[in-house]
Amino acid sequence: MFSSDELCSLRWDPVSKGVEVIDQTFLPHALRWCRLDSLSAFCRAISTMQVRGAPLIGITAAFGLANAIAEDASSENLLNASAALLATRPTAVNLRWALDQITRAVQSLEPSQRALVALKKALALREEDIVKCERIGANGLQLLSALNKDRLNIMTHCNAGWLATVQWGTALAPIYKAHAEGMAVHVWVSETRPRNQGTNLTAWELHRAGVPFTIVTDNSCGQLIRQGNVDCVIVGSDRTAANGDVCNKVGTYLKALAARASDIPFYVALPESTIDRTCVSGEHITIEERNQSEVLSIGGLDIAGNYREVKLADAHSKAINPAFDVTPACLVASLITEHGNFDASEKGLQQLGAIGSDGH
Image (cartoon, rainbow, N blue to C red; front, side, top):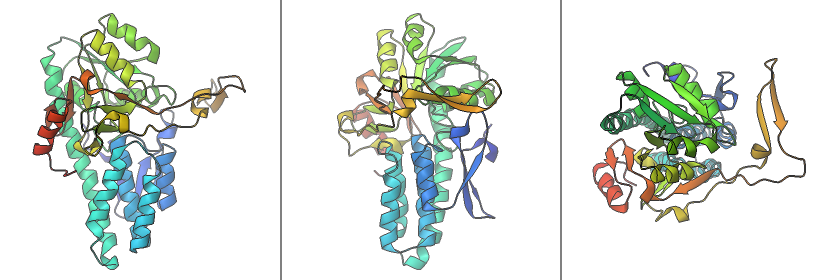
């Protein structure tokens, strides 16, 4: 299913020696690849959400730092470039993790040796991400199969598919595996205001994969769960604290509360690199606040097929736009990782750490 480089979000061209990413700001209306060839281009791609999703942000940043080292391999530039990339998105821990991976690989080397090693490390991280996400899919499939439903109705939030990683995704990976196994699967795709990553990205992905889905408004999700129309919820994570608290796209917490009230499992799928073991709990996670214009206006195609951005609110209105929220560990039925499925608790993450090999 994911053997072709067409179904990936970031590709390396060995001929031109450049990085290309899908510009996700044009989806679902156009599939456009964007070449990243400078530190400013990599930073802009992350900050403007041409690329998004914690794992993909990390991989993109790794290539961005490798690109900066190729231009100037001095220790000063290594520090400056890393700081510039780190400043683009404050919440997703994979960003810092990936930059640390590149830095540790090159900092003890002579400057003349750094560029090649940095590129090799970035390419290795890309391949590792693909393997990890496929394993997440296989482990999540075990949980979905155990629900023993003739037709499985799954709710997800935001986009945690291959557009948020390199291939497979995190929360969508078990769904893709289930669909490939012939399970009858239907996905409730919440729109995910204000940037509509569910409507624009998740629905686009599922359609391409042939997975049945229905887009629903964010405000309808609790009612769908209460009525028994949802068998489980699966979401991704941008940062998971050492106690199992999960930081994900804003609106995740409300779905977790609704799932608990209706006694259905709420799963979180993530690679180990998304766990911040230095963060004691979700209370210590910095929540990114994006521009209020994302709430006060919306973009899309008009009847003639032209892209338009329109204002939704009175010109004097103000808005607050937190990009993430924190779901307490007690609401999470299981953490689905590349190493297996674990309790969302300090003990569960310790067990995961004993098996894992990321070393952070």
